[in-house]
Image (cartoon, one colour):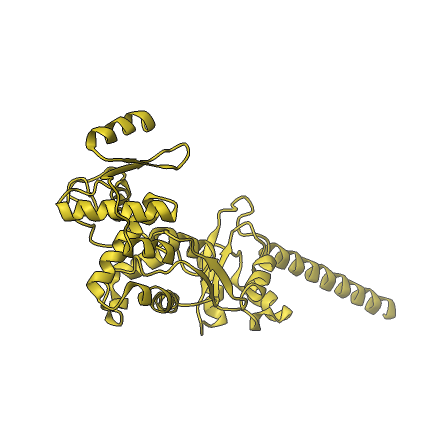
Length: 325
């Protein structure tokens, strides 16, 4: 009887061990990558105030984890369930649940630094912010188009031109309203005093500066080209600026220029309706102080970037044949 009881206890121990190993294997399998062969990145967002359960459900819905239950157990057991931080994260299905958990618990909290170079347009800034995981791709452009921000900042028709180029720090999980407000506050502090108080005049200067930023490189050339464009406007000529046409294509989502676009300065006289980028202070100064010259035309040498000037259309056509063909 004693031997039989001993044998029974051994069997129970063995069965318990087998069961424990089986559960451990299943649990380990459930925490493996959801799709080890798919490293395609997914931008995943944890919103402020979002519950742990909602976060786990979101990961499962995005096919980033194999098992919600296993992820919950691992998160609670490790204590990381209480340290998940709001923000945007670049994850992929080839990551294990442990790797995802570690990133969600440790990547947030630190400010995100993003430098916006002078002359970048809203589409390029949107991409830079999205790449840094400050916003979702397309979020800035969509926010500009929906016009909600104009309720407070109604003096401008678009954010384009008012996203002042500078180095910014954003808190992880910043909302689009906070991101835009940071840009606008900086614009008001640094650019607005230089542009002056008259909104319509300031906007015209900003549009001209955005064109100069795209067209020519040096401060000296920017001042000369500002004078050329001012002369064309005063004479009722077409501006004939390639950069505005390219921007119009971005706005319309077409790769082919449309003559109906108000940004096509080969077919529409005057300045385009909005800035085509976000100029810095240097080029704003050039737009405010255009330099007189005998020139009416210019082009950029694609090899050197040097600006080539012409007094007449005939001279310009010679330069085009020499430098651009």
